[in-house]
Length: 522
Ligand code: CA
Image (cartoon, rainbow, N blue to C red):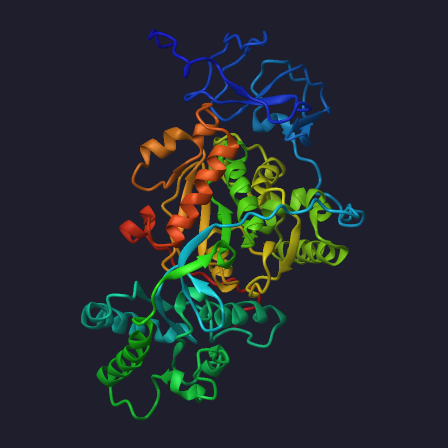
């Protein structure tokens, strides 16, 4: 034990989230040693690491272990009060059965409107609003990726200095398009993802597609009907095929891509930010590298901010099926109507079947890092994860890669994989993402700003030039959930307006877009 004087921050602190809980988590950095006496009289019998659970009372073998007011498992053996409740002591319960889930209440809580909040965005002809001004170049097949990368390098060097109002150029490259069962039922997911990615509001409607010429995914399928005043313009003007006989060698192909990009940069460079109501925002939420503080600090702060955004009329998405599956009984009752509740169940059932086909189940979700951070199993992780959806009614459900066309809180079904979730939310029209992390990840997206929120102050301090927001202040008592939630809401508006830059954008840390392909590869 250190011999330095005991300060307020050294005082042993447990966080109990619900009065029904029979476990609490240790808030102190580096954990607490056996023999520590907690305010209220509990004495720790063993060392308990930070973020890990301690039994507040004796828990008999087979009795429920309760956190968030919900059962996260049962005790494998008798657990004496004051003992570290390690993962091995927790028996995971079955996932809630789909058959008899609670349906929405007859009258849902009314949403109290929040007016007067604005941001500076790029309004598009179709009414959507971007937070960035990016030229995105779509591709219909992986074969063209190397050539496109080469062309983009030249675009960055030769063209971009002439178009100072354009934030960047981005190739939407991927492993799909050929060598796949293009008509299999699962193919609908990657195809609509690519179609809708091209329409993301941050790309200003300036679509162009680079294809090869012999691939299964015809480039025409990726060109949406234009809503930018160019209606009726033949799609062929938006497509370049490397096998086109007009190209004699590599140089002219690259020149062709560059000329096509120049036309679009001319248009994008004329875009200007204008004041838009907060209701024009489409904010995605997700978590990655979660720990036991995720559900205590970062996710509740994000949930509070989500509620503010919904009250302001914005669209807010939460996702990650395997991280909400075990809390589905808490979500169906929050749906605006029975149809939305059934759509939630449909997406869960689809994913259950998908995992089953692969010989896996939901327990495959938790990582070694999650467990080291104090999360015993997927039930505990899910309860902490859904907190970031706040308390608003769930207004709609999207299948993977579908585009959102409504306001309010939406469940956008995606895998929990950070990159696939980010890509699918972009396809759904997300223009800014908030990402909570306990273990830490330098995750970022080129297509939309990502605000990274740390669950613990120690992480926010150690990663001072990667983390944008410290929600750990909630655990140390320096901020309430409400205060942190309001701060995060204001940060979202600042970042959406280009007034503040995220650290990921500052350093240019941008992960690959990654398609979700549940269909067979040939
Ligand atoms: Ca994730």
